[in-house]
Length: 349
Ligand code: ADP
Ligand code: MG
Image (cartoon, rainbow, N blue to C red):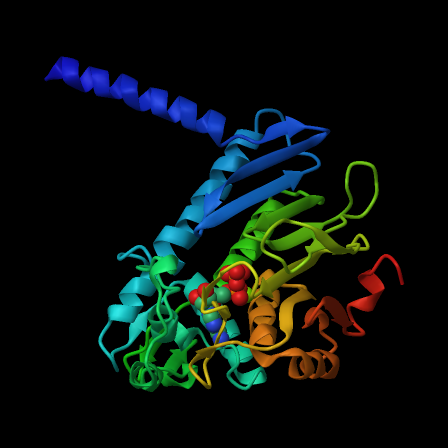
């Protein structure tokens, strides 16, 4: 017994040693980078400098812990014990105490739900599952759901059916909702990592989780970060437009119908679903990008814009001075529609 215990101790310390090497920032080209997987996608963080000798490992460990708490602990619909999964299976009408992170995301989600007249609605869960984009699904085997199932799913929807008591940090469902925060949680995770880097006193960094970005300060050579918007095509990654952070702290998020979709008889069914019809979006807007202070807000708005379509999205952005970059499919070519607040960031203006 004792020998066994001893062995497992050695094995454990080896795992810890290997892990800390894997989780440390890599130094390259006068930058430190950290890569990994979270929320069903990859992430990447670049730092121009790290505070103090030997601390990159400690910072990397904090980033990993934070992401795993946000993913597996809170927002995952794949992990049965996550906070969101527990809320989804919780009794209707009974108050459920939420974490600070969950509360912040739900409050912001409610704001975007309201300002987009329900185009952004995290209660689309039942429809997401029905259309085959949910946690248990295997995309190639999807078929088109019948209208009766869609109607049944829609009865369980509507973010107005989630009561949020901010003072008590409690929420309760007035219907059997299935909440899906996939369109905002990645952005929120970017914001959380950004706050952590700020706390570490870092003034220049670039964070990316599954295509949602936040950047601060300048690169090592004193120039601004230059994010690229890719062309809305699924075959390859091609740069469509580049812009500059102008040295500001900005978040950028995008949403598109060109990567996560399935096709039946030549018709494309996107993973952005219009909560008001129960159908995957089907219009000419191929991708929407938003710049905002918060990546969570940018993420939610980008998804809302995909649902709203070109005209309504553009109006929404113009009326509220939101920086939006929309790529519209005009049959044989793509055209861009850029809101006034986005224009200063473009390099060729
Ligand atoms: P990505 O995950 O590719 O960045 P989005 O941010 O647009 O794309 O999130 C899409 C996901 O959000 C879908 O897979 C689905 O889980 C969920 N979703 C789909 N339609 C809506 C909607 N109208 N409102 C809120 N969430 C949605
Ligand atoms: Mg989104």
